[in-house]
Amino acid sequence: MTTIAFIGLGNMGNPMAANLVKAGHTVLGFDLVPENLAAARGNGVTVMADAGAAVRDADVVITMLPAGKHVVSVYEDIAARAKKDALFIDSSTIDIESARKAHEIADRHGHLSVDAPVSGGTGGATAGTLTFMAGGSQDAFARAEPVLKPMAGRIVHCGEAGAGQAAKICNNMILGISMIGVAEAFVLAEKIGLSHQALFDVASTSSGQCWSLTTYCPVPGPVPTSPANRDYAPGFAAALMLKDLSLAQDAARSAGAATPLGAQAAQLYALFSGQGHGGVDFSGIVRMLRGDPA
Image 1: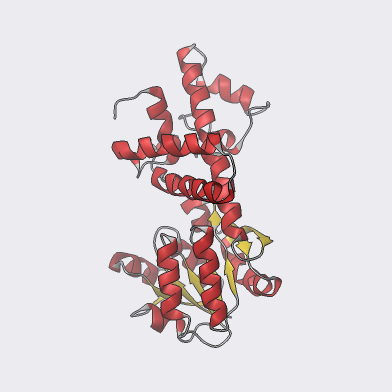
Image 2 (image 1 turned 45 degrees about the vertical axis):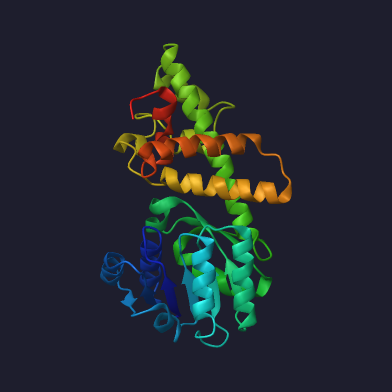
C-alpha cells in the first residue's frame, strides 16, 4: 500500500486520515494542535514531529488546512523536502488563486498536484462518503483517484488546476442560498399555521425539493438525522458556510459575475455569525430568520 503524509488533522482531516489507515495505507500525520495529534494517534496515524518529517518518506502528501495562505505556506515549506515525484493533494477549501499558486509550487519541484476540496461534512468524512471535486491534469487525477477512494462516495474530475475549488465554491453558494430559502419557507409556514410535517410532506415531493430540505431540514422532526434535532450541533458550521460564500463572492468580483442571491446569503451568514453563532450548524440560521432571541 501507499505511504501518505497527512497535514491538518482537525475535524475533517482526522477521520479522513483514519479511513486511509483502515484501507491499509501507512499514514504519517502532523498538526499544530496537540489534541488533534493525540486523536489521530488513536486512529492509527503515525504522528510526526513536523510537516517536513511527515513528507520525507511519503509517496502522497494530503493537506487539509484552514485557508489559502496556510496551504501556500506549507507547500513552500515542504515541496522541496518531499520525495521525488510525490503526489500533492490539497483538500482544503480555499480561493482559486491560492490553489493555482499551490499547483505552481508543486510543479516547480517536480510533483504532480490536485486541488480536491470535499463536500459532505464531518459525517461524510467519518463514513468515507465525501464527494471530492478535483482539479489538475489527467495524469495527476489518475494517480489521486485510488488514494481518494477510501474517503469518498464520489470523485469528480472537474478540470485543470483550480477547477476543484471553483466547483466547491459554486456548489456551496447554491447550498447557502437554498438553506435560507428553505428556512424562510418554514418560518412562513409557522406564521400562517402550517405544520412543519405538512410543509415537508408537500415540498419534499414537489418542485420545492432540494438537499437542504430532504437531507438537512432546518427544523426538528421531518428528517431525524438533521442537526435541527440536536440543537443545531454542527455538521457544517455557519462560520464555514460564511467562509465559502465569501470565497464565492471574491471569485464573482474577480470574474465580473452577477451573484445577487449569493451576495445576500453571504450578508445573512455574516450577520448570523456576527451574533455569536459561527459554531452553530449553518441550518440554525432559521432561528435568526424566525427572530428567536440570540
